Length: 267
Image (cartoon, rainbow, N blue to C red; front, side, top):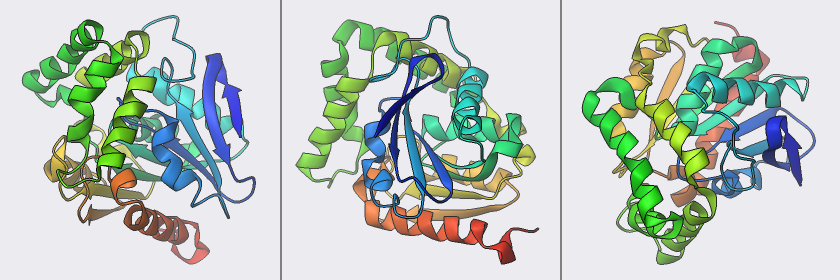
C-alpha cells in the first residue's frame, strides 16, 4: 500500500492494526530499505516507511531543508495518524529520529537507532567529507555514485545479490535536490549535547562489521542516552537491517514488546 503525505511525501504502508512504527532510511536509500521489516512486522503493527523529501518517489523539496525540517515532516506523518509512533531510523534516519524525539517528545513512544551517529558535525573533517559527496553525485550520476559507495554499506562477506539490491536501491533513490540538503543537514549536526534530552526508551543497534559509522559512533549514542539498550548485530555491516534481517527483527520486536508492556512503561 502506498500513500502521499505532506508536500508530496511518498510512504509505503503495511498492516492496519497495532502500534504505529515509522521507518526512516539512510542518506543513500529509500523506503525500499525497510522491506525486511515492513513485511515481517505487518502482523500486529502499522508499518510506515518514507521516501524522504527529494528521494525515490517523493517530490523534491522547494527549499533547502534542515535537520529540524526533516524531523518536523516526520512529526506531521505521525500526527496525521492520530497516535504516537515507535520510530526506527537507520544511519541518517537515526539522526532525524533523535532530533524528532527532542522536538516532538509527545509523538515518540520509542526509538530504534541503527548504525547511526551523532552527526557529521562532530569534526571539521567529517563535515567536509559529507559535503564532498554532493559534487561527487553530481559529477558521477546516481548509478556510478551507487556503484562506488553501495558495496561498502555491507560487510565484505555479503551475498552478491544483496550488494546488487543495495546498489540498485541507491541508484533509484538519490538525486541532487534531495541528497544536497540531506548531506548538509548531517554536516551541520552534532547531537552529543542534546542526547540527554531524549526521553523515549531507545534501542541502539550496530552491525559488527559496520565500515561506515562503526560501533564507536553507536557507543557514543548509547552512552549519551538515559533509557537505552545497546546491541551489536553479528555478521552485519552498516545496513544491519538488510544484511541480517532476522537478527535485527528479533531485537526490534523484543524492544517493541518491552516498551509496549504496561509493566515496563514506567521509569
